[in-house]
Image (tube, each protein chain N blue to C red):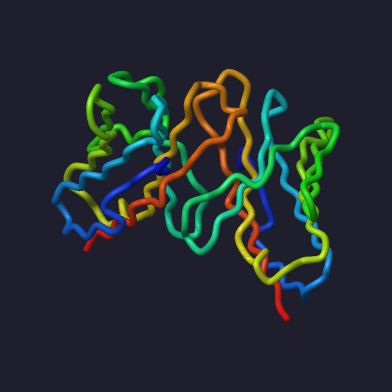
Length: 115
Length: 111
């Protein structure tokens, strides 16, 4: 049973380009969460999605960031017109249900570097 | 005030030592508490949940003090492999969708 799969592991973009980060949850998990970790900081919640629905996007920046979790395929975190401040590690996690006292499984993350 | 505060460390301890970390949280309505471990910018991994009654898993003991709003983690007989960053995590009531992470406490166990 594969874990949470994120790709790419490393992504380099120039300022103004778009970044697409992909996350495939564990088999049987329909809840996906995205977190961002800036250098020397803790993980910050961005968005929580269930299949085809955004449940909580209170941590998403108001502009340039969007997320989706289609019926088929991985969850996508999209960052348009990237800036240097977007450089960070982006982690995806999945769970089988909404109850967070169950174990939350994280992917290995995508390290985004903006030149 | 940060929602979850931790001493960043680093804590440098010799093998075999006992080390304790504390974490404070600001929202008294917080409902669930965890310790996660993160190695060198890799993904965080759940170490243990934290209960008011205290819980123990081998060399690790976690404790919650709701009155003082702090959480502790005790590691006995430290191993080199315990070197990592330990993240205090809180879930607030009514926000079952997200974990709030502290910035972590760095532990370095030496020979």
